[in-house]
Image (tube, rainbow, N blue to C red; front, side, top):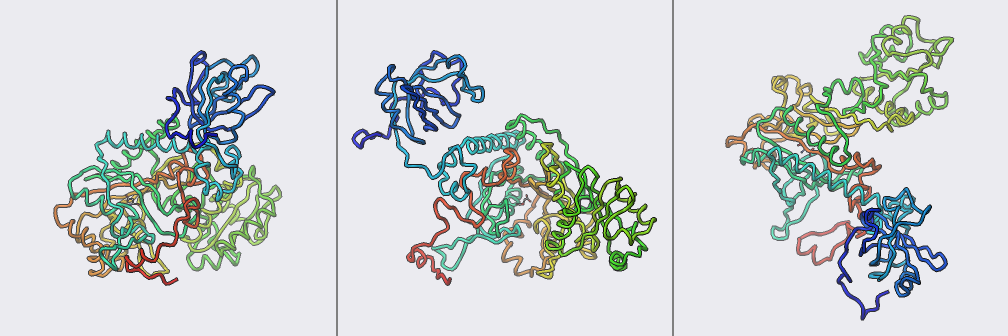
Amino acid sequence: MPKTEQYSPLPPWPRTDYCGAIRATDVGREVALWGWVQTRRDHGGLIFIDLRDRDGIVQLVLNPKHDGAAHAAAGETRSEFYVAAKGKVVRRAEGTANAELPTGEIEVLVSVFETLSASAPLPFQIAEADATAEEIRLKHRYLDLRRPEMQRNLRWRHQALQAVRSHLDQNGFIDVETPILFKSTPEGARDYLVPSRVNPGKFYALPQSPQLLKQILMIGGLDRYYQIARCFRDEDLRANRQPEFSQIDIEMTCPRPEDIQSIAEGMIASVYRNVLDVDVKPPFARIPYAEAMERFGIDKPDTRFGLELKNLTAAFAGTSFKVFAEILARAESVYGISVPGDHALSRRELDELTESVKSRHAMGLAWIKAAEGGWQGPIAKHLSDGERAAATAASGLKAGGTLLMVAGPPAKVRPVLGDIRLQLAAKFGLDKSDALKFLWVVDFPLFDYSADDKRMVSVNHPFTAPNPDDLAMLDSAPLEARALAYDMVLNGQELGGGSIRIHSRELQLKVFELLGLTREEAMDRFGFLLDALKYGAPPHGGIAFGVDRICMMLCGAESLRDVIAFPKTQKAVDPMSGAPSEVDPRQLKELSIKVTS
Ligand code: ASP
């Protein structure tokens, strides 16, 4: 261990190689390395050290006969000491090569060895981090980041963004930074607010996305913009959300949806080619929102497997089964999923599924089995031969299969079955397939009705243009109007979404009005956009992709936190620094803020 008088912040010699990059072709070379001691094994006289840096591991050998001082210094190291070594690359002895390691054919016979920095006993072993509680890994993120998996994930993230930048650059997009201290930009979450000291009582909002700014860049003549933008959304953190995240933010002038989609497809294909050497073949399938809901019960369908929803309403018209009859009398519907016999569901599994549908969705699940002797299950006896034949035809039920059914209003029934579909896929392992099913969901509705707020809300955001064919509906049936909005989906995950925007001030005001904003509220919040729209605003549109989500898919990671260097926990906390934390009363005073809780 270096004594204080020996302390030097400078490297003892220049490095020649990364540990993990040395190969058999380097045999005979003198190398100088730095890295962490992953393991140290003393074998009689010989000491073996696995030395690790960001490229991987190389085996060092210290022979007391070769260099006594180096051997003695190595003998004092422990896990995660940071050391420097010089030596000669030699081939490993017959029969001792390690085929699992890229450096497994060679080792470095060390002649000079120095500890640059000792390590305290570790809270967890780097190699065993997988089994360590995530809270502890995040608290000691500097150790966790040393794991090869984290090193790889961050490197792939870098490569993905390199591919993105180069693709967008080649297509004429200009990287423009937009402010972090800004005004509220609604994307459906709460704002993070920052008090302004020099303007007491006033606040900036951190951008939920650069949406308004990128639109204004189009009005400002940039024509094609992109940015790897930080976005901030104060939401109750569900699994796989982060309060701050990065977005590939794109906007262009005068696009058709297909222009944006094709640039985005090329970008994603370039990412997969550059990072994984995988060929993704655009154009991706397009599925209208209405069809996605009808077939999959969700607006981001995973099409790696079937188990599609089927509308069985007609099959049960006139049924004498009371539960269905009552629901159908209210002009509601019956939907089902037919589960093939090779994915048999036991009675217990069906009971559990019924229970979970009841507790999660407050809906009933009916099922029948197409057994050899005929239909089985609690409701089978209520169904006539005609209904059985019609339901079999409509659902595609085959001998040995099970038909799961939910009845009620389609807007409720389909998402419930969509959820069951995903649960079944997970149960049967169908969601483990490494197929890449990219698709676009298009023709989203412009508005949705929020029962909580008793008003219409934007499905995307308020700046999304209505489909020109549906403009008249804004007055007659606004909830039926379609938007020029589109989402890119991969294997059931939304990678990105965007839209053509409103570039007419009048139409934008009308949409605000439909959303329940008074003229004053609209001017107060979005006056700057409404002003900009007065001055020859060109038609424009764009899209944004979640960097973290894309990287999670690329890396096959379970969590967004595994592809972010310093993520926050589910509670929006950083366990390493302890942020958020209390602040000095003096700071609060300067900001004219009183904490009431
Ligand atoms: N601003 C949108 C979002 O963050 C994306 C877009 O419309 O371009 O989801």
